[in-house]
Amino acid sequence: MTDTDASAQARAEVAAAEQRLEAVRDRGLGEAVNIEQYKLHAARKRLAALTDDDGDAAA
Amino acid sequence: MSVAVHEAGHAVVAWRLDHRLGWVTVEPGRSFDGCQTSWPAVAADPTDVDPDVPPPLWPAAARRNVEAEVMVLLAGDLAAELFARPTSGYRSPQPAERVIDQLPEPTDGERHHLANAQAEESYDTDDARALALAVVAFGGHRLAAAAPWLTWLQAEARALLTAHADDVLRLADALESRRTLGGDAVYRVLTAV
Image (cartoon, rainbow over all chains, first blue to last red; front, top):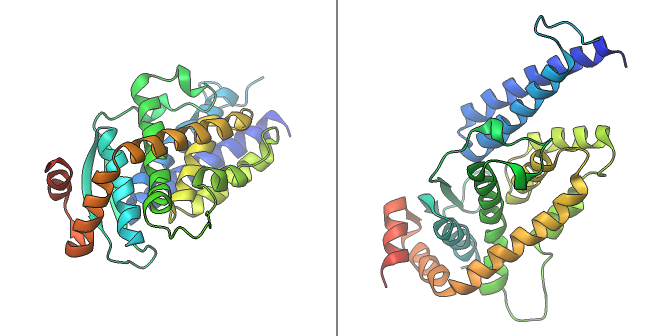
């Protein structure tokens, strides 16, 4: 997997995590909201590690 | 009675861990036999729960909240086993062992990802939520450490339940008769000695 592929996958994971967080909020699942917030943070951290400030793939 | 003891177990461990108590019910819903709600008194920043950092190195509130959340989740089945099962020699699997059995292989990043995705889809059971928290806490490369962590949290929850057996049974009795209790009512039952 290239860095660009990895970055694209990481962006997709962030988007999926944001959708899941929204979904559990809509369902009123308080405990699940906490868990999804943790997962969203982890996904964002993975993405940040792969991309520079401009959102380009890291060298 | 076992549903009431199960929910009372969640509530008593939450109470002893200084969680704010919400309502408890033994009225069945679409996906549960009963339900208990509580939340940490001190909120933690979700960004402090970092799967790349071992939990002992997290800020205290983050570690305390995640560990307390897992203990509360495990406490339901523990209480039912301790106080409501017939003494016929049958022992159900320990909740932590069930969760440990579902942990993915510790060195396989792809399997970690899959397990994460599976856990995301099901928050309907205590086991699924405890599994999701263990995966979040230990990430893909340190999952081997999640098993002793879960076993330790189960032992802590069991010790709290054993020390507060009277509270569990008193709250379970109140739930049997009143079916649903708000947080203030739960607190009054637990402190009315």
